[in-house]
View 1 (cartoon, rainbow, N blue to C red):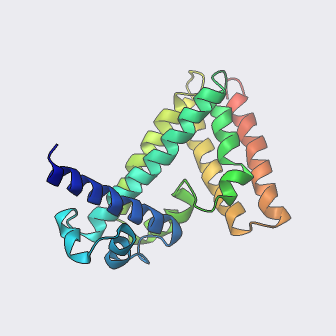
View 2: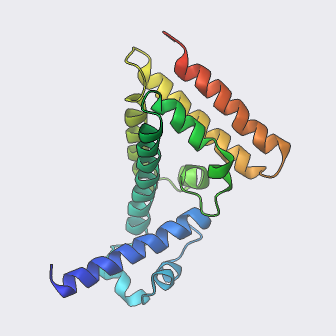
View 3: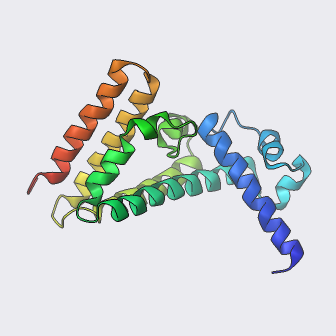
Length: 194
């Protein structure tokens, strides 16, 4: 790799990192190209050497942020609980530590409502990532006719409970959302034949 190519890759990575931080903090619409480039330590003029548009940037950012967070969660769960990784995913995702992190790892609670309002190209990017979440989570479950259905339900439960818990963080209700979702999610995932 030449020095010029290496520098361009570093700049590209810095733009994606800045966009990811803004995506998690502000969302898509409230994040400007100027803010992204400032966060990357670059000038706005260099943006189009990396991305065709703001939509292109945030579509790629949404996909890479979601994929990175999800894959890290799955990898850690498999390491920590090889006998029951799906339950460990549920436990980690619905933890106070995950909810209260200064910088959220999972973008789903932060962006789901915005993606439903703004539509394409973000909807397609989110759908593709969610399909992969369902597939990979399903692989952690025992084989069965309802494996995909359980994966769908568990992911919806986790994302919804985390979203509501974040909205009322610091209250008893916020903690109750996490606890109830962990309990019911565990029952769902361990129920035989259901």
